[in-house]
Amino acid sequence: MEIELKNEIGLDPENWEDIRCLGYQMVDDMVEFLKSIREKPAWKEIPEEVKNTYKSKLPKYPSNINEVYEEFKKNIFEYSKGNVHPRFFSWVEGNGTAFGALSDFMASTMNSNVAIGNHSALYIENQVISWCKEMMGFSEQATGMLVSGASIANITSLIVARNAVCEKMKEDGLYSVGKKLVAYCSAETHNCVTKAIEVIGLGNKQLRKIEVNDKFEININSLINQIEQDKKDGMLPFCIIGNAGTVNTGAFDDLNSLLEITQAENMWLHIDGAFGALAKLVPEYQDRLKAIEEADSLAFDFHKWLYVNYEVACVLIKHPELHRKTYASPANYLLAHDRGLAAGPDAFSNYGMELSRGFKALKVWMSLKENGINKYKTLISQNIQQSRYLGQQVSKNEKLELIAEVSLNIVCFRYVNGQLNNAQLNELNKELVMRLHESGVATPSYTLLNGIYAIRVANTNHRTRKADLDIILKEILKIGDKLSVEFVKKIMFKSK
Ligand SMILES: *Cc1c(COP(=O)(O)O)cnc(C)c1O
Image (tube, rainbow, N blue to C red; front, side, top):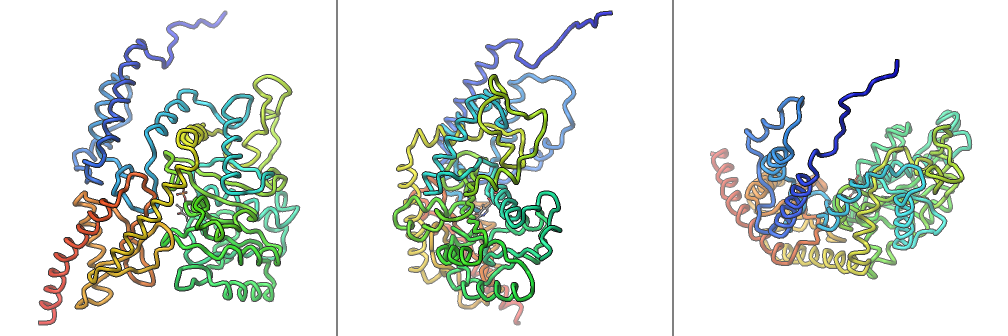
């Protein structure tokens, strides 16, 4: 009996005009949202009743798309993180752009799976990678790929660095080495590097977190001594992870020295340049970041300091054979053909862990075309200048204290009052940050530097203007003064 197929269904709209109308509405809403972002609070708390809607059960039956969209607008769109706002300065996060959002929409319309095949997306990703190499002065022969973020870009590189140690790593794993592999980085290195070292089987004890100097840069002498000691102890130093812009303060390790050491010791130099590597576009930083050109691998984000919409980062690896050998794994269903859809460039799955991948390259490609690299250079310089201005204003004010030198685009400072000790100031400044967020005026973040709680303004924001920095300082002083009175009262009450 022939199989009968009745009442077949699909997911296309019954009426394409409905989706067209809603699509136009979405574009209108997007433009209104971004155009008037400055008038909105930088952040607002999600009310309980809205949070409760996030707990509704799995939908069983269809809903009207207009109703779904209305619910999105009311309960989701309204409570975004705010990293599109001109006074968002938390962690290190970019704003995205309107054109970037539209290019994501078109990438999603194509819905290309950029793993394998003979189609435009693979070629465009390769083109973007070539642009990355050009931008960073990185070796032309290098291979690379776009990944979701610097965390994945870092681990993608460190796996290649590990496999480069020993021919048999792929077959026998770490057992093939016969010695403990040791990696080195500064104590200020991002925790995704620690996680990577743990996940690739080395164990975080084998990641030496070398002390930093007063500029939060790796102490080169301590590094050299530690490598010597480890060699004496029968271990195998194999990799240094250098920072081009630490997450806490934006510090640059002395990359030229790190390069010399790795070359002398036959080690791998990986650079975590999540946001800071982009400073290489600015003439003033070119010398300090020259070593990037010679590094074995480099990780950096597009979604931070190139302001591209989340999520997209780049990893570049100088050694094509080692890179490919690490990740290529033969499979009959992935064999390249000579012609047809299964021809095309070398599959990206030969260069990383992911098989199915979205067309992240399109928003990068469109954004770089829209603006041209020179505009990004200007914007990055602008963010650096703005940060210096903020640092200057902080230094000038006796109620404020700069906690770290402004080496790039991050300003760490705190509100001070001579009557309070460090622990009390830590508490005060933490409360200050929470109240500032709740005020909706601005959203800086925070960090601990040598036991000092610092308000941390990280500026990778293309919407920020000088006036925004003045507003944030004014509000910090206002809240600080109020808290100061409260805190001093509390101590006097306690001491009675
Ligand atoms: C943000 C950051 C990372 C992690 O990058 P993601 O894109 O969030 O995965 C790593 N290193 C540094 C220095 C960072 O600032």
